[in-house]
Length: 502
Image 1 (cartoon, rainbow, N blue to C red):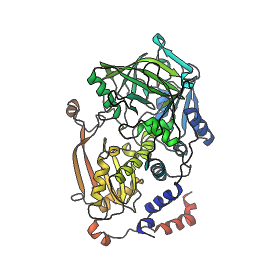
Image 2 (image 1 turned 90 degrees about the vertical axis):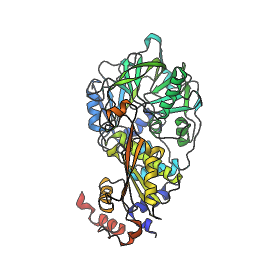
Image 3 (image 1 turned 30 degrees about the horizontal axis):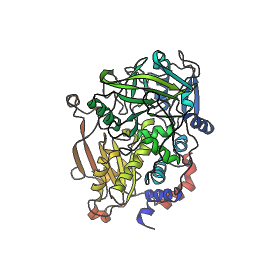
Image 4 (image 1 turned 180 degrees about the vertical axis):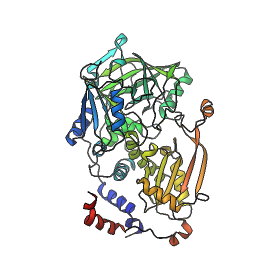
């Protein structure tokens, strides 16, 4: 057996490779079918009578910080039509495995590895297909009847500047020059009954589309899907390749086209089985104050600023629509959990594509919102290998945005275990010689550490620390041995004395 296979991380990689040679089936195609599967798992709690003004946001704050907590379906919201509901905390427990189409018993690291092995290594696309009808067209509202305030949209955080209908949503936009569809997640605030504000960070694909429309002085067509199926939402949240439609990626994952209907005003594709969709246009130069909003960093990062306005011209919704809510909280929380699974897999794929050999695992840590802290484990093959892995992880597409720290460790370290990662950093790195710095890297106005004066100038950049916490390559064989049991001894100990922990 090789050294890699004798380590805990090597064993996980081997098991995943053997068990994930085939694709697993998704058990749902829309949010209602997903909810039915989660009901079978016993991971749904029903709450009636909670207010959108305060109660739903408070409850979300409690449940989203725990992976073991159930998802919660809020019904009979005061002041809203009977049957309108809000779902939050969808990604946790065993349901996160079901959501991604894998067996329930896999750990989070195995789940990320499986996502990479089965889906990302050979990213396949199946083009979406237009159909004439679908449940989303059960109710079509236009003209003076448009009123987004009638839905049970919560005030998610105590300090928010308004109600945010876009937290578990995604926006559908069209590149006006290259004519490709992007599906991305951006926060969406209600201004009044028919206008919305939404923040898009510089560099994101949807922002690139918006900037092109502004430069052409043309209105940008937009559809906001506020009740899509969880798989589509997760793909929209992830750093997918430029120029590729996320709907086509969802089709590739499922092995069949995603069914869409054509927006009656914009012509944009809308999921035929979505719960709630808002359609309209962003007029060039039209802006209103947006924010503040509690963001994924755990701060009100961007305060109040003028942002473009979406004039809502049509609302499409199913009977008794379910609003998917996924508000960011101080990490670790729900957004960090699902992004850790997908982003860790994406970064590992980017490392492989860049030619970095023997990467054993990657983990984008939840405590950093799955962005600020990356752990990378490698089997060292040559001097400089660890530096190469760390720098590429910090600057590849999935790792570059808003990152801060990358820690590279040997293959015996479980990078998904924060304490184990920190132990390796503290004992195998030297502050004076093991840290490389990158300045002027791609960040975001949501970063609370960026000087307000720099933000005002649009200089939303930060620095990165690449920490080499591998045993020094040239004398790694002389490095002290660790005082932990071998994988075999650890397994025997768990079998014999595991009952002591119960």
